[in-house]
Structure formats: C-alpha cells, structure tokens
Length: 74
Picture 1 (spheres, rainbow, N blue to C red):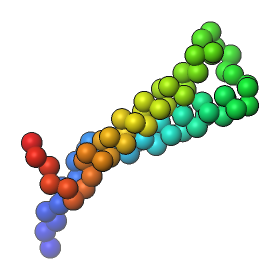
Picture 2 (picture 1 turned 30 degrees about the vertical axis):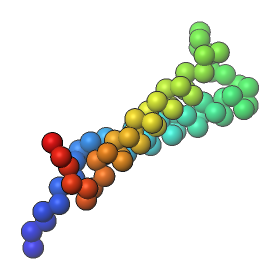
Picture 3 (picture 1 turned 90 degrees about the vertical axis):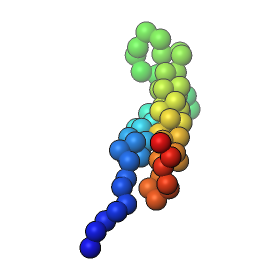
Picture 4 (picture 1 turned 90 degrees about the horizontal axis):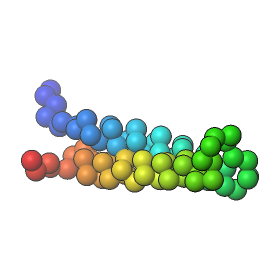
C-alpha cells in the first residue's frame, strides 16, 4: 500500500498559529471583560487582542490555503 497524499508543512504551521492565536485572543478578550490588565507598561493597548487576532487570521489563512487533499499549484 503506497500513500501518495502529501500534507504540506504549512498546514501544520497554520494549525499551530490558529490554536495559539485563539488562546492569546481569548485571554485578551478576558482581560477586556474582567478589567484586570497585566502589569505591563503599555497594557492599555491590549496587545493580546491584536496579536492573537493576527495570529488567528494568519493561521486560518494557512489552514485554508494548504488544506490536505487540495491540489497545490506551485
């Protein structure tokens, strides 16, 4: 039995980015709702919301772009 389907490494990178982005974004939303901010200098910029959102968006893009089973055109 030969396995001919290849899974791109970019799909796994996308899964990891989306997972960590969702965790960071969720923590940032929790900070906003609870009002308890981490004791950092620029806490009012809400970096976890922005950083987590960007990681989630990029990870989702990679997951959709490099989904297994989709023919890749290089």
